[in-house]
Length: 564
Image 1: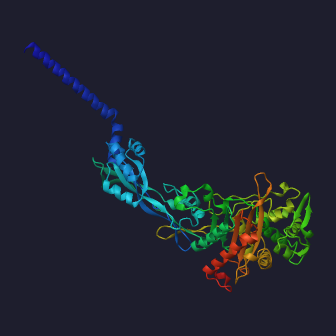
Image 2 (image 1 turned 135 degrees about the horizontal axis):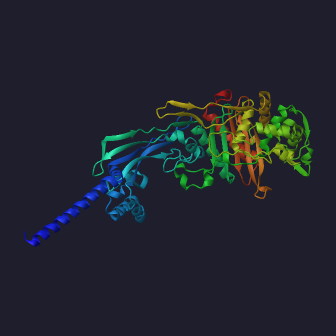
Image 3 (image 1 turned 60 degrees about the vertical axis):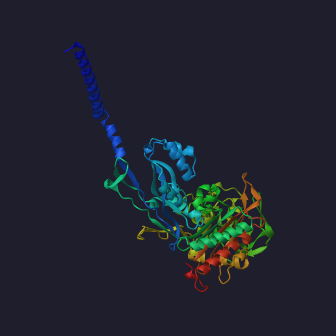
């Protein structure tokens, strides 16, 4: 063979031998060294892990009217690895979704097979994407929370975020019950990325969330919010709270706060509007707190209705402090002291009670501790122990100064008088049911403690009935029914610790009917102007709410037990 031919054959042999060695080396590298990572990539390309989302439970009022529910929507996501012309798809999506093109392009450039594009689309946008079918863009079913009554009971219900996680109110407190449990399935995909549903190799079904049935009545809540809104507007107030409670069970029938907010637009509302003032705001109750002093005095038999008390003609010195009445009084019976809301007469009775015993009963009525309601954010208020009282505290605490309480605590305290002496734990969820309606759990009335005797509670009901018929609470009267309660007008404390002479909290706490109460209503109005007295501002709200609720519940004056 010619020498040149042998050389060419040798070169070809060496070339093929080299290629063989390179191929073998590559094969060994891929099979032995990169096997795990390449297998992982292949699994990711051919296996799709799909989350199976549970249906979030609904929230309903005591009569099963829906207050929060979920419905199906679709969200758009991108398999960005399958999109070659990302600029074109970004431009197309920008038109379809009304979103910034640069923002969309950044998301499409992520090296992932699942990138959110836009969550919870409206029906028109969903239809446009289905018809246009942009390359690499897919739709996935999700749920969107719907609040059919918009802002009604917003501070109780709360809201969820984009992922349906509870953020405030019952949506947060009972999130574990409402949310259910997510499931999944792993699905094989063909070379085009299409799911082969027939070859599911792993599957865990989702578990739907449970429904909440509330103690709240939608109609009573509406009545309460309507009347509070009227008064806040009429008196140019900063806000207010009204709590309507069943004193026998502790069930909350309505809890209204102003300002309020639209649950569907919660993210756009200011924090101040989302605050549940009935449990988060501390206020000095003023004369409404005299129910504690009076109850204690009657329980300890320190005084009775007809005992006479000299009210110093309107000015009484306690230590270095001069205590005044709104109107000067001479000698009054104890009954008249409460009806006319005499500060001096009340303080003189409190001096007979003594600091320690008064503090003991203040705590027994539930002040200085949380009520235990099933809502987040409740504060305990502020009640200082007697060893921290000053020499003039005995002239302040009995009439609702130097103490901090919440509107809900006031409702619970007056419920003690209304129900025969027991402090009840308030609650807003009556039942938890599955989505087939089967009962999972029910919540029953819970007595926290016996505070006063039934006899004392009966005396207090008659005493507070007199406040409405012939005392400071005349504007709380309800035609056809005998109701009772106590007014309160408190100066607000300024940042420097001094009492304001222009900012007041007006309140009225009461119950009805007097003989066998079934409803308790606590009203607090923040900084009404120019009128600011509890008897003028808060008492009429109590009257209108009580009247309309009794009418709604078809209670007749002779059938008090038919109220709820």
